[in-house]
Image (tube, rainbow, N blue to C red; front, side, top):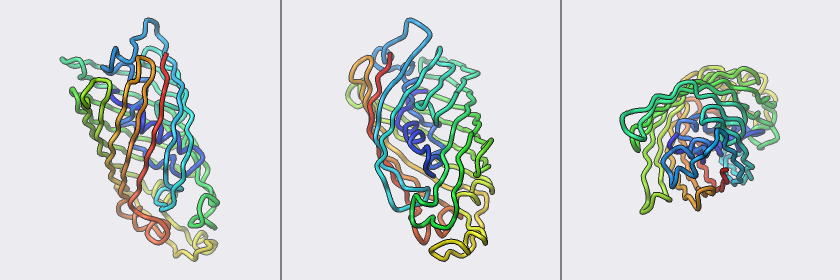
Length: 292
């Protein structure tokens, strides 16, 4: 995992808010410090003599109230995680809060080249109709657990990722497919690295209808008088992001990230987006972690 902290932090921040699902493609470009210590950073971000690695940190992010909202809030984000042999990780830094296992790691002919296959169980937060006036009368969506299978392929400074996620519980009960590309390079010094990313997400009928659809009952109870809207499966978004991380020392890393996502098709046409929100979604965050 050549770069995995800021996207991961974004996903962690979404717990308890609709934006838990806001960047499902994050794992494709994650910047998790659990993987970062093995990614060719200064002294490999402190090479470990034992099998265990521990991370604590904090970040702050600026995110939309719900997926498709044009209202934004600042959210503080505590981070904590434990990794064993860069294979098993638990915590809130390597994706949503949960467990991740890398079950296949194949190294390529060059130091950075490798293929990683993994599976994870993570929590996604729900959506409260009191989160925003645009959601009043639509009812709450309970969060739940998602299982995800991921494949990440690194060729030197270029990376590609594909993941499939399926909700095991909660009101969303959806399936998503996330795809992305990234390119990382040093900014003057190996201690400072820039990552450029692009991603897209496909979602099934259940996901789209739960997040963007308006049922007849919801239309009747909505305070803003929405018309019923059927949201069907399809590509729901495309996104671009830029991340900067600086290794302050062998144990400390600071980072920042700016992200842009454009909602597509029925996601963009939903009344909670087209009428009351905005299909153009932005995000920003800054944070620091300590690894030992």
